[in-house]
Length: 453
Image (cartoon, rainbow, N blue to C red; front, side, top):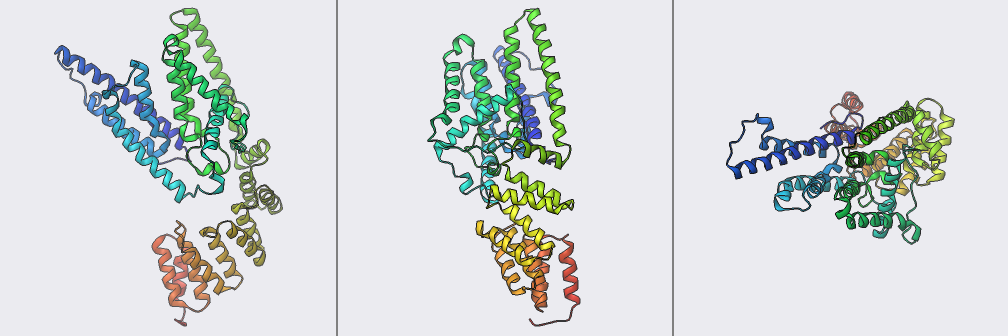
């Protein structure tokens, strides 16, 4: 399953909808087959791709692909259970048993994602340390935020301000309490209004569960909400709204025409707003400038915009943004890394090393910082310090371990320890065979005269 420029949310949504369609068609065919068996009527000769077995296998395969695109698709079997309850008013064994493989696959991949977020992506620490009560507060605010943006999609931003969650503040509980009240009212009125409103609320809220803050994801470091977290929930809400309006219009021709005209007008308006919003993504610079205008406290935006300016040669402006990022968040390691890079390029190795040591004070086990510090030490001629720093970086597993091996090889060969350097270059190439710098270093080391062992 391949992502194209991070379109994993839309890809996962498309595959989830196809999986749901295949499953619902399978469910209808299964019910029809059971009815024919009860009446002892003849089974129709269907093409293989329309037979129940093929539909079920296709639904499961599409669901697996949706999970591989993004594991928030794991909630699809729960969505199908809500739809089954909405149709019949109860859940029976035949409704649940076919979904058990879906639940098993979804749970396995969801747990794997949670493990990756904690260990590889490192979504853990003080920035994610919300108490359980705080997570319920956050869940209420999240649902209210996405519902509000769905009804009135104004002031959309690439990165929204990060809320301060305080469960001791009574006012912060109001969105969660309001959500519970709405759910209770829909339950109480299900006999009068039908099961549709309650099913719609359950689907919208249920699909949002992965984005409510109960599970740590790295993006929570910058903001608790993001528009792309709600793609599935928006699709559910739109479908429920369209179905509800169609039901209310009934067979009244005038009402149906009015609803259709209003729908066309809303789609046209949303199309214009989408076109305008897309202009903010015209380039990286327009994106960061717009985001900073809407969210001046976005320390990550200052860091990334500064890096963009630095690559364009606008060094003074870049430094201003790096420093602004550090004023907002003094322990922002990427900003410290970028400032160190500026000083390294200027030959100010002592200043660069100082900034990198400040970054290590935040996280002593960050291999990226250690590799950068080893590089600075090497350029400053401090080869013993460089070798020790690279060895420290290799203590921590990282996809960039080949950089530490290559850097260690450079530090060793500068000390005349050619044999050891050769081994490090070879290890770098073993980890990344197409790393041209390690290959060039290895060739030079093999051609150099032998030194001390």
